[in-house]
Length: 238
Image (cartoon, rainbow, N blue to C red; front, side, top):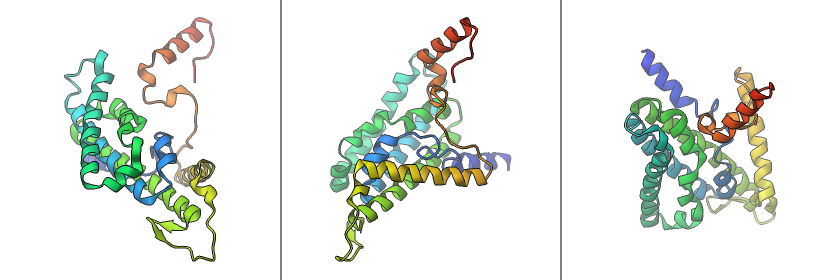
């Protein structure tokens, strides 16, 4: 019973409390670039979710074998392998989506959500828990980018998944499918997510420096900065 409750918590944390886009502020580049289209956003969300689940499982299974000094290169190789598989499948069976995603599909390799979960979770937990974590984070990412794309495509182009919604008499606000509109919608969605989290007693998301980065524990720049501050008798970096 306790284990099933823990797995349920690992699954649902990515929905809101640790949503990678709206709470952890990760993967913002593909989120802003791809969210102009519902079809492209759904394709990106599914692709990222598949890579997250696969890489989490393999990294967790090999966590006791991979030497600590080369774990990051090993993680990247594993992630790149799954990205290559997904890319070939998308090219073969969904060429239209592949064209929409463009360079952002192979760039999933360096998506900080995936590497962050590998370093912060999969490398330290069981295979089952890591798989559940990948599913939850993938659903959270997909929901965030899909919601953002619905708002941007509907208001900016008057369509949903390419289907015209607005009548001819209504002119869409093209600003919403441009970068400024993307940042505006993203900011509003983060504010709403923070408000909901606050009502549920969760801490607000915030950018408090390098400590929030999934790689903070192994970052030599951050470690050196803390060492210098401590030597000077100052406060450690935040």
